[in-house]
Length: 569
Ligand code: ADP
Ligand code: MG
Image 1 (spheres, rainbow, N blue to C red):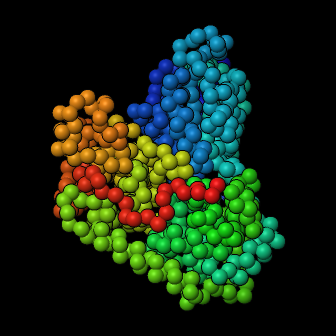
Image 2: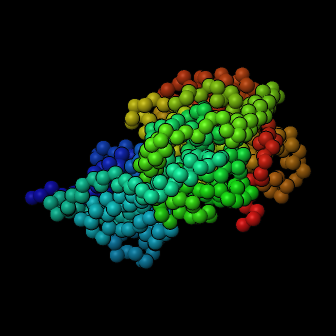
Image 3: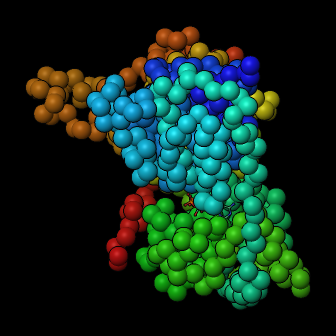
């Protein structure tokens, strides 16, 4: 008799055959056996505490490795919790494959346990959503899900598994093996578009390169560095484009962001969308006549909000190499002594002065700038920085440098809070398995931490030495001090008077970590902060959480433009 395989084994073996190396999930009926089969197939299984965080983690491994992670969830509520992660992955253009257990075959619409129209529910949050109709169909459906998640614009895919298929068996000989799908095919931009783009670039008075997370995902760092250094052009990274080229590169004008965007006459846009994060590419944040040279692998993206002067459709790495040839041909280089470089450098110096003045304030409680100034001095250059929270993320972005590509993970295009711990767990799992030994530092606002705080148990359980820094201002955007809170308690019913932004003042998030055996620190001063961070960074066994109590009214420095300006649209 032939060897029999179960549905669970087929799912696990098919994922492994497609080089899916990580699975994050929460088990329960009907998918416990799938997780066990995944481990037996050599997939690393990380059990999380909430499906949302599991899905965030799975998508982060997709971004970090270029191959999707899997997220394994139970039916109904389990799958619904994962939708947030799918949406986030899809909006970020990160590959992830969600596997959801569901009601038995022929029980659909019968009122079964945790029954839900799961395939339909996932459609809005994914590129592909399907339920294999038989055990024999599992390998090809998994292959299609993995392939679709990576090809074209990356995103989320969903595979629904009928509960009774998990332990059902079939003869192995009846199942067609589907081999691993290759990496996505790479396409070059049209020759004439390259020629045109090169001539527009050469004619630019105030050129600017914008490096987005598409360039990070597309692993364009080597060609891009050569292009920037050969062409002499200034560049500006988006939040997750940070590190594709180091933040301290002489051509980086991040510290003059507003000025660079406002006055550039030609922008070479590499893997970034002209959405809210780039102020729609329009006035008042951009010159109304700016010429955009748009590089993207997604044709539908071309022309969103601004019609590009030249559309360069294809892979960023390939196109940068094409542009390099075009620029290099006659040895052209943008001069370093232009008025434009002068303007940018003046602005960089002026902004650095303001931030430094705020960083050197020696008040207790500390402000954001002081915290980030000292944190940035102590972090190793190769660490992966995960960051979320409103002020924490925004100020941290300007003060914490990245030196390596794909070493910053944050709330992203969807502005999702609660991603941090899942991302950090994913990064730590990838680091461990690739033996790179780079630190994972998770810089969280106190509100952001709360969304997935229980994942510290996951970190402790797997001994993932993540360093979490909670920049605690007692609230969302801002909070109140303990004395004010006590006064409010006396005044009456807090549900009617406590400002909705407030959280419990001086909450002991550090004790959440110590509860599970990790290291916890409560710090108020620069010295305490530095000591705690140094100790945390020297511990490779356990995670740490540093609860940094800052001034609850600390804010960003004066901004030139209000947040999310879209005044003339
Ligand atoms: P950011 O948040 O940095 O602004 P976005 O997520 O808005 O970046 O944009 C990333 C863009 O990069 C998407 O439009 C996506 O289609 C594109 N992209 C992803 N990978 C590649 C690649 N290898 N080559 C070209 N474009 C890519
Ligand atoms: Mg806060």
